Each structure stands twice: as structure tokens, then as C-alpha cells.
Image: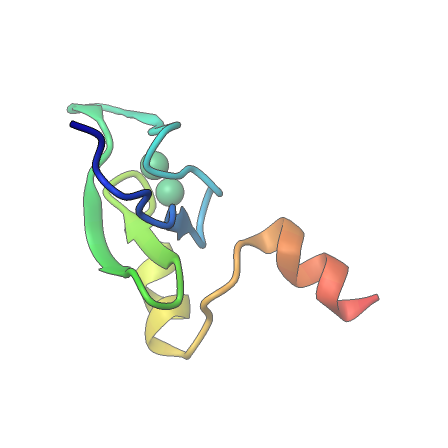
Length: 69
Ligand SMILES: [Zn+2]
Ligand SMILES: [Zn+2]
């Protein structure tokens, strides 16, 4: 049985997502915080990005650059 596709969330720190988790000292990253509606989160490899998250950042760096254009 196929589950309905869940929108991928992307880490605002490194851009990894549910299908492409990055490697941390403890293995594959997990979400520290994730907002499925906004499709954004901060993974366990990017604790430094938590500050940006709390500042309201919900966009991965490369997408933020595109938006600035
Ligand atoms: Zn990350
Ligand atoms: Zn990650």
C-alpha cells in the first residue's frame, strides 16, 4: 500500500531533505525541528541554523539567494 506523498521538508542550513539526509558525527541526520506545512526544518547536522530558524528563516540558502535576485 502506497502512502500519499508527503511533501519533503528541506533543511534551511544545508538543504538536505527527507530523502537525502546528510551525515553527522552520529550517523544520518534527523530533524531537530521541522514544519511540514512550510516544508522547512533544521536537521541535527545544522544546530547552528537554529538561530536563523528562530529569526524567522524558513528557506534554504540557495533558495534564499534565488529569491533575492
Ligand atoms: Zn542540515
Ligand atoms: Zn541534514
